[in-house]
Length: 473
Image 1 (tube, one colour):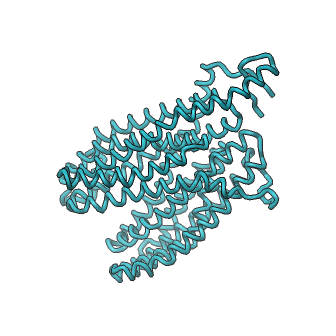
Image 2: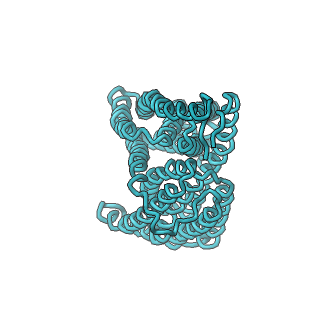
Image 3: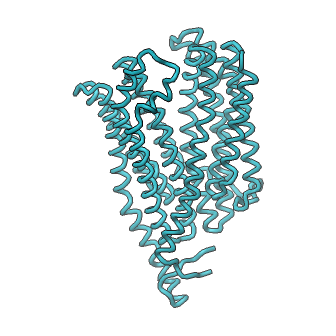
């Protein structure tokens, strides 16, 4: 069916309303997902310092695996959204089946890798007592890695279909279940038994959310119903074509912050503690642009499937404005409320707290700039992925994290004598590099969209006698 293109004002309202609704929902969902790690950290802390150290060690390794899988599976969103937007159920079905296959493979791979972690720790000179605790924690976690990775894929399917109403209730139910099981199984237990109980609780929570998300996906009206048909095929190569660069970016960014933490250790416990607190708040703040970016990627992919170039341009502009405005507001809070934010995490510690607060105050100024730049990278990268572009740029950005970011951190911190602040300068430079590289890609992508649209628009104009029409399924 052919309809005249919507007036410019109507397009602005339409895209702003859509991003406001879906972006806020996903941003809140991202924040809710931090609740389970918070509960886990709190429960391991109750078991003692050794349990907390073992939990942190296992958690850091698991986080790298999870972040990599998360990046790879993001390739599902544009493929599924484009298929749905174009009314091509076969393409959407292939993407979903391919995504499920990859999720299962990565879940099994993560399980195998984590099963070997205690063996690796024992042969790298770690404290034997710490290795025993880590092993018990991993034994509890292992049954949950497969459903945990599949949960990521199911969540992306619902985002791609813009069926978001059950995402927040499901994560709230999972968090409540996790908290109750922790109190029931780990409360009052020894460190060894408590860690295994906490790991088992996470595994049970993953299975619960897997079941709830599968039910939500089964009843989602825009998800194709022929997923069990083997003749539909698997779009594995297409998903990996988008997902591998994204997964590499996520892994390289996480590695940069891990390396920055190791470098910060050379400047003493106060600097290291302050750095850890600031990085934690940075991760919390980035949940907002991540939510906006996921909504923007799904929306732009849907419009690309519909060949609605005018709406795509408006959606891109709205997403960039919303992401920038949110990050600026958050940056103001980070700078003006830095002392309060630090004290929220030091309420049970008195020794050395003032020194940590003073050091973190300086770091927060750099963190405010980093979260603005990182938020722009997240939104811009998702927009380009929604347009099926930016793979080559993303590889260059990944190299920028390691080269510009870590190289700058070493130069400013050690070579020029800026200390811990120099490490944050290096991190900021990495994101400046990333923003510039991604921004340079937009003119070419938008020009290509315009060229691709002109022949189609001219043909439709000659068919209908109007110069500006859009086809919609």
